[in-house]
Image (cartoon, rainbow, N blue to C red):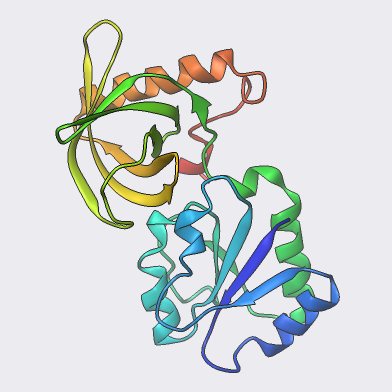
Length: 221
């Protein structure tokens, strides 16, 4: 079941809320000032966060959108700049905005920014050696669970490949599970990036679900 979270000032987006409710959407309002925790925790779920970017509060909320694992939609006219990766929804009649959001929910590729592929490799995080479960262009899931709090930064994470090569990553915790941790990560050097891309392409080639997926499409949209 897909969920839409609305982030707006008190009483804001009432018309859009009503239009979505009429369509049977699981709709949840969140407190002001930050993205809902679910935006960082839904590593295996489907949902969309909608932020009213016409207010100062909304624009401040969007500043944290790069770490979200689900799509983030900013309601904003063209003259308002939105962070990279945030979808723009131009303000219009609530039923029309609801229709556009339904289209986002109906298109599976919108609900996962980058395809994940299963990759089993030892991963050293600090002094602890874990095992990767799957990876994506910007993400990594490892087992077992670790001691790190959600949203904490983890520096110098390294993935050790079968041939002894290492990929150094900078990472932050985006989701905790009883059986593992989801990290948002970034290769530290160009060489690390090339090895990371090679891992992803190799995994995609073996995947029956994502064999034809383009892991870089979101970079150029």
